[in-house]
Image (cartoon, rainbow, N blue to C red):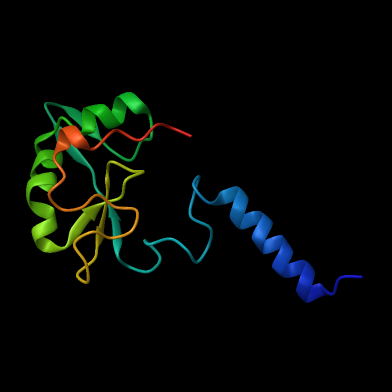
Length: 116
């Protein structure tokens, strides 16, 4: 028979496996740790916000802000999360943080994440 502690650990593993990749499980978000920010911009009357729709992310990649971020954000230790076009993370310790695009990866080499 399993103890409460064993059931708790097993339950946590099940919840983590289900949520991971869809949404950061509580306590695992880089936002929670203060190193991630979701960016938005407005261009020609259109708002580009947090939206995982494929077409929206393609549009986001065509904005002046996205191009500037690709060209320059890494100079400030800010890197794009590979699964979210709009998210930038602060990583001063490395130029190729896990799960992020390396600094000098051009726009055309950054595929738009497919919705899950």
